[in-house]
Amino acid sequence: MDQLPPEASQVFARLNEIVHSGATTQDVYDAIVHATVELVDGCDRAAILLRDRERLTSVAATDPIAKGIDELEVSIGDGPCLDAILDEAVQFDPDLSTPTAWPELAARVVADTPVRGMIGCRLLIDGTKVGALDLFSDTPGALTQRSVDQSAILASLASVAIMTVRARGEAANLTKALDNSRAIGKAVGLIMAARKIDDEQAFQVLRRTSQELNMKLSLVAEEIVRGQSQQAHR
Image (cartoon, rainbow, N blue to C red; front, side):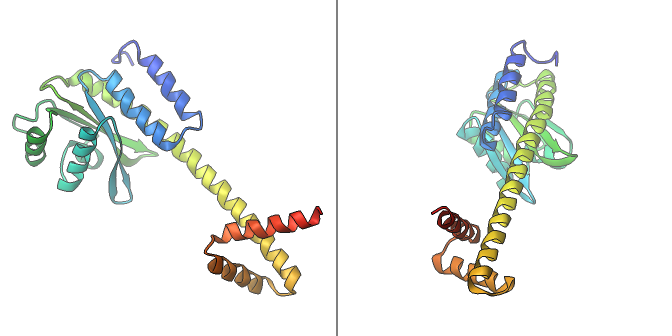
């Protein structure tokens, strides 16, 4: 942690507050890339590239240039950020205008953007390679080994933050799925009682109603349950 500047603790506290405040996943991604620019020596721009199955997507960036380079890497199929995910955990090129491991990408970046240096740091969740924290500098040589060390620390913290918000989202989705299941079960029971039919026939009635109204099955079920509840209280 001594590789990071003194203000790091304040930035981490801010990030931690965002993660645990119920903020959206996107809020957390955005906070990570802006913290990266604040804390890493020589970093002018940052982005996060995440993998969903085999698809790679730039989910956050400090600016369009950073996002565009991430997308260019995906389009070309080569670059330090991709290699950080697939090969070595950290990839580093302080000056893209000199001979590089990624000549096609470097030529395009140098020709079309002010970026001259790049770092890609792998993001891991439960041992799975999920993406990369990507750093860009507009000044040749401004990114140094110290920058690499700092970005590695931030990538570790980013991995924990992303894991936390994903877990929270999965829990919320599970709760919603359970609530939907309960509503559907109750609606099926009400239809069975009202029409004197079995559970399979009742479910088919519910599904047919959903299709006719062009509404989700769970929403139709909720309306049936709500309607019965209102009648019971009259």
